[in-house]
Amino acid sequence: MFSQKNIKFKRILTRDLKKLLIWRNNAFIRSKMLNQNKISYKNHLVWYEGLKKNKTRKSFVIYYKKTQIGVASIKEIDSINKTCTWGYYIADSSYRYLALLVEYEFINLIFIKIKIRKIWGETISTNKKILKIHKFLGFIIEGTYKEHIKVKNKYLDVVLTSLFKKDWNKYKKKLLLSLKINK
Image (cartoon, rainbow, N blue to C red; front, side):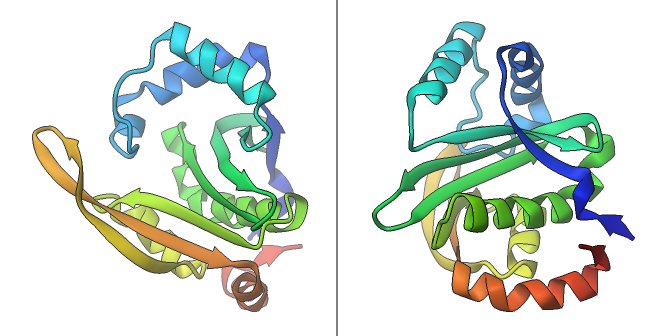
């Protein structure tokens, strides 16, 4: 049995930047991203400086117990319509088994602390595992951008998913029981 208390999302600090850049430039992580290009340290610093000033974005280091295991981000936060897009990755492969729990906790954070009404996202169609997790946690497919991005000389579809807070509230109780998560 897992405890959700072991998963934490902490704001990114300057001291985290080198590790995060190594993670983001890892071939496996890049292969799951819409932008699969390597990121330079200079561009990484520009991103971080922009993150500190931009009210429509929030990024966090994901911790399991006291270990940094990945990054979670919320973008395009629309305070009027109460929507946002989001994403996360678990960089440390020995913790990828926690993806479902991390996603569950991040969804809670977005709906409860950020006070969002609808989360939407874009996922490369080849990322079957994350699409399966999204579906399990209640996301619906709203559509597909056909042959939308070019990866290794091949055009891939991008799947559009969404989850409403009202639907999430219905799923939560059932999920807690089926996942055997301690509150």
